[in-house]
Image (cartoon, rainbow, N blue to C red; front, side):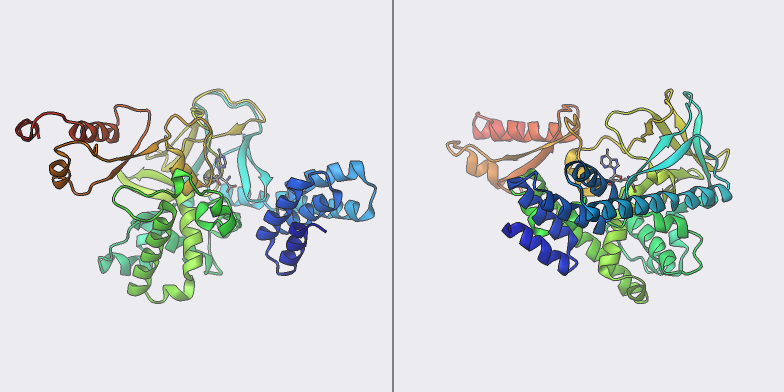
Length: 409
Ligand SMILES: C[S@@+](CC[C@H](N)C(=O)[O-])C[C@H]1O[C@@H](n2cnc3c(N)ncnc32)[C@H](O)[C@@H]1O
């Protein structure tokens, strides 16, 4: 048996399905059509609750091989997928019981942790797709009013990401509360975080070697992904410091996972004319499509609800997308766990240094905070970072005398 397949089997015994999938994929690279490897992969995918993907493999296996085991696994996974889809219905019913209004959309499960919103009927431009009243929204203001939130605010504890961390505290407190009103929302949160680089296993991270993503920010010595981990850890410690009972509610890993999920589902709302970052259950199921202007979302003071409106005609059966902002790929990757192909807002990292033969190099460098500077710039030449890079390059390549340089400087 292939060494990678052996490794995959051993990892399955240890219930380490994510690494097992990695090993079986390696085995399949050499023998992509080997049925026993494909069957092994389908079983691993079932354990990872990736039922759709598992079914796709089993369907092709059923065509090439008549085996009762394959048939049994196929029937079992089909049943699991059906149960999984049915379990989404109470979520919509609960949202409606809170006063939310929507009747032309449904939640579609593409994979257990990858859902999206689909139009079940045609939707006209300017039509409200969904409205969710204030009592169906989790705001940062509500998080500040919890006992732990109050301790954080009253002690002036400074958090690196105050709103995201406070909302994570709220979600974790509710998760620990057996009588929580937010049960359906909490149960809807993705279980697997494997698309977020913060949770990459070593082998996955190694695949990023050489990519600018593992590079560093200006004035920083560690990779962006590690910086985020450190920052979340600092916020967790700061919260436990002022509210030690939080340690009983969530350990660092729980906090890290919730914090990353909150960040990928947050809406920067203005409520009562004040910024009030929020989590909007159900509306957090809209995915993003590059350049799509399909919808517009905002909190509407008049109706006291969060509203998503169509900006164009939406055909029945189409997926409905919302805008997550113009972001470079390193931000999409870090905070949402995906990247956009041919992203015009993407940035490159440019590291600058002086010209070694420049007579004034020593002087120029002595005037700077550090010898090398890194700039992340996009195609947008009107962006401030672009102007900063240009000013810096002009300074480094200035060819006049010291007196002229001082005059210009
Ligand atoms: C606000 S949630 C959307 C609902 C999510 N699909 C779910 O099932 O929970 C944002 C997350 O959805 C996924 N997502 C959204 N748009 C995507 C896209 N264009 N490509 C890949 N993943 C996307 C990413 O995992 C992202 O972190």
